Length: 270
Image (cartoon, rainbow, N blue to C red; front, side, top):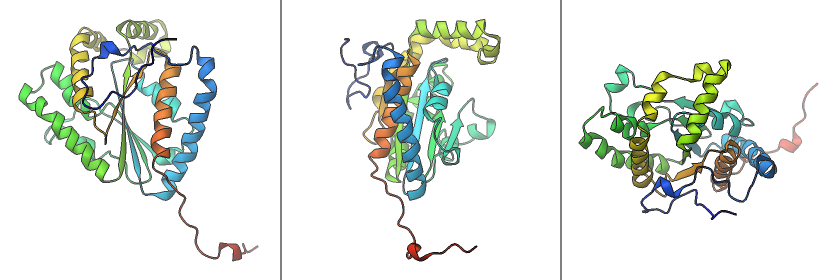
């Protein structure tokens, strides 16, 4: 059994991704070993989401960040497969439009924050503005350096407004990324998922790891914690993410709204 690996870093600790094994699977040795635990988590998400929607007091924001082929789409699809689509909204943040560039960097993010009763999922997020923007030198350093505190303040505002925030970095190895890229090239039905630009980003792997380490260190707060998810094994990734979602929703101590009075006296007419 390998040494137990933390999913959430200690607050105030400098994150070094080399200390986090992307192939770690905890107490489980195989997908089959984790099957029942994952099934339990998905069933709990289904139940808890309904209470969240009915009570209409809280919102849950789930943020996914990863390198290309890290599994963001797949995680969302598998972990939320039992959820009611009516109560889930997904926003995917790509290259900003001109209108978005004409505003502050959080403008396009804030309008996608989930309202009460909803689960909102960010496929990439405001962290692109301290990741790709930093690595590709799209703005001066003093601009992106200031954004860590802007992000912390923004997330604190959301938390103070009743939004529970979970942030997941899906951590894969460079070798695993290569295998997933090759799989996309080998299978015609996955060609659409591959871009020549993915290779240009891969060449900057070390720069991205440094950028992620800063984001994971400087924006890991009690009100918006980061989870470093070992993601080489997709089944373990799904187990960790679903477990964190269950824990967060159960921690809200939600209740169904009180029923209208005298329901026991209601007679449904023919």
